[in-house]
Length: 202
Image (cartoon, rainbow, N blue to C red; front, side):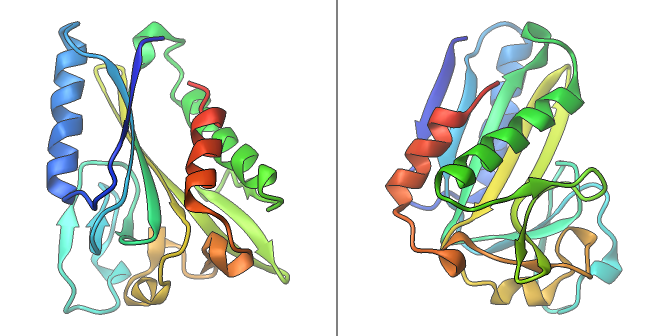
């Protein structure tokens, strides 16, 4: 498959990134654009997916950017690796569930190579680990499909602060925690990105 791999060193403005994804979707829809996999980070921002509820905002003073992705409310910011995708499911089986399973497998296999055991959960989208008998989220997934083109993607907590999550009910789940890779073990970011790219299987 002819997929552009894009890597941004400096933090990317959230709205600018989403606008770029939307434009790429439109181009692919008229057969005038490459599929995309884009690794980046954002400056600190709270984003709400299409199914979020106001009661999931604990700190009412924070600003929320309403996104058209699936899912609920989450935080993005420095130290968190984002992988945005624009993938044409018409070139594959038109199977959204299979596509999300491929994303889950990419993250789980990458963490396994770092000797971090993780798992998916049919009832709670994302990737989870068991941290001393407490289930915590280490990666979030939010996908939208338009004209059979899947876009948005996933985020992995790498070295980010976890304090911002206290201002919201992340992804609408209030009985589980959040964790980052560097809370478990020190990992080189370049090595992590290299493993992620190698394990991508769309």
